[in-house]
Structures are given as C-alpha cells and as structure tokens.
Length: 419
Ligand code: UD1
Image: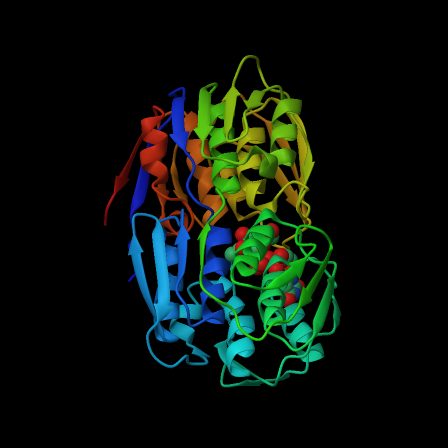
C-alpha cells in the first residue's frame, strides 16, 4: 500500500555538517537481480533501505529466492525452483524490474515478464533490450500484457542505438551465461554498469571493457556465489551538494566516490561553489554569490539526467539566465511548473527550459511527480520564504534513504507528516 506522507519544510536554514552517503539504488537493483544467475549464496553490502529495494526483494522471493535483509546487508540464496514469471503487480511499481529478463533467460531459456507500463518522465520503452535478445537467438512475443521470451542465448555482436543503462545491464547478465562471445557496442558507461560487471566477475563471469563503450563477454557455463559492496549513491551525493549550494552552507559527504560526480562538481565550481575532495569524501562550501550555469543532460560521464531537476531548483534561485537542455528523457520537466508556483521564472519549450533566477521563492503546497522532481521541490523548500508542504513523498522514499533525517541532521527545518 502506498503511504501518502508529506514533508513540511520551513525555509531559511543554512546547512552545515557531515553526513554519510548511502549505497546506490541504481547499482544495488541490477546487483540484486544478478543473484538470479546462480544457485549459490550472494551477499551484497551497502544496500540502501528503500522502497525500490523492497520491491526488488519481493520480486526475487516470487522468483524462487530466499532473501535476508539486515542493516544494509542483503543475502540471497536458493529456496525452491527458479520461476520465469515476473508479475505485473511488482513490475508496474518499478520499471527496473525489466532487468530480470536477462538473468531468467540465461538460467531457464525463458522469461515471462510483465510490460512495465507508463511512467511520469516519458515513454521509457524496452525495445533495445528486446532487440538485443532477439539477435542473441531469443523469440519474443507479447501476450496479455506480458513479454514472453524463449530461446537459448548465443553470443553475438550487438550495437545499441542509444547507450541505455538498463539494456546494457540486461545484456551483460544474459551474455555472462550465453554460449560463446558477445561484443556489445555503444554500451552505457555509467558507474552502475562497472559495479555490476565487478559483481559478475566476482561470480566467475568473463567480462572485459565495462566502463567503456565496447564490452566483450565470454559466456561461461555456470556462475558461483560472491560477496560484493555496492558503490555509493552519486545522485544522493549530488543532491546534498546542491542543498549546500542553495542554503549557502558547508557540507561534508563521507563514503563517496568523487570520481563518479565529475560533471556535477564541474558545474558547481563554474557556478562559484568551493568543492574539494579526498579519495572518499567531498566537501562543498558556499563562499560567494553563485552565477548561473547552463547544462545539457548527457550519458555518463556527462551531466546526469537524474540531477537535472535539482539543478533547476538551484538555478531558479541563482540570479541571471540559464538554460537546461534535457536530452535523455522526453518529458522530464514536471517539476518546473511546481517551481513556478513558488515564484520561479521558468519557460519550458520542448526539451529546453530557460530559467531567470529570482532572489527568493515562497513556500506553498507542492505535488511530487517523480523521484528526482521530488528532490528538487524539497531543495526549493529549504530556501523558500515560509512553509512548503511537499505532497506524495512516496516517490522520494523509492530512492532517497532517510532524506529528511539527513537534511535535518545538517540543520534543515523539516519534518515528515504521516498520513
Ligand atoms: C536508468 C536509471 C535512471 C536514469 C537513466 C538514465 C536505474 C534503475 N534507472 O534508467 O535513474 O535516469 O538510467 O541515466 O538504473 N530507451 C529506449 N528504448 C529502450 C531503452 C531505453 O527508447 O529499450 C530510452 C529511454 O526511453 C530514455 C533513454 O533511452 O529516453 C535512456 O534510458 P535508459 O538509459 O535505458 O534508462 P533506464 O535504464 O530506464
């Protein structure tokens, strides 16, 4: 059941202090699904406690796994016979569930996965995943809302039309147990892909080139168990850096890999924020008024689309003109109209948003449409005059671990109102 909690944020507090960044949701999800590739025990550490992770755990249990979750450690082992059906009631809650298809095909030679359905930030089809499986010898059909995939996977050359993160993950997992060699071109290069490849390699997969546009996978017959630590969440880290910038604060983040945040750090520095780092910490300090900086969302290592909404919140209160070009998703400006209700000046035309920064926003009730839009509205609330009530925070609970607790710890005046 969805809880309709809201956040009440009173703006005007400067954030200061140090917080630990959680494990990455987007890395943990494919790692959880990779456990389907073996009957042996896989232990994952640094898994965040989030709604999407709970959905993934339920899906694994339905597919025949026993899962134990304790303090960031998830242990997955065999329970019964592996099943091929990923049902609608779980897949519709989380589109990333489509990534079970590769492992199920690899283990069972068949998969029966519900079509994910619509999504607030765009159509988000999975045609690239399916086309790749077809070229690996799989027959695909759609029946009663389910994708039926059947066939023995054979390695081949696959070139993705776009460097899709989910398609790259699905193909990596399928190819690990396919017959022969798969050469994947135009692969996604996100750190989450490299993390998944690290886990698969620890399980015995033969993968070369993860993190580059060409990944070569030599299929093996079986995979073993492994112990793996999930990478830190670069999007949570970026969101907290922007919170520091907007509130004129000074925030230190620990347990983070700064190399994953290159484009975000560069944009923040260009805006005038002081950002320094060690090998696993990042520190942001506001020292002068910020300047507007235009960005375009790109695949990694470009500016991440998952930071676009938060960047818009920052630019909304940075005097001057900036432009945001969203080139990854076609309908990812739903937060703009909510920011306008707070007094922001934003003009959206197609994939382009022009922002005239204003000195101050004013608090009002706001509706969250998706995960990162929700983060942008909370950020705006932190600097708005008066009180901002952010409704439907279940979207935020899908992807931010204890966000309100972390922000409160840094000094924000914010609380959750349960419903
Ligand atoms: C993942 C992330 C998401 C992030 C996105 C882009 C997870 C769980 N989610 O989503 O947070 O915003 O990467 O960095 O890791 N596309 C197609 N056909 C396909 C596949 C994708 O047209 O078969 C399009 C999508 O509609 C979108 C673009 O390609 O416009 C990028 O999608 P993709 O990289 O696949 O994103 P996800 O893996 O869904």
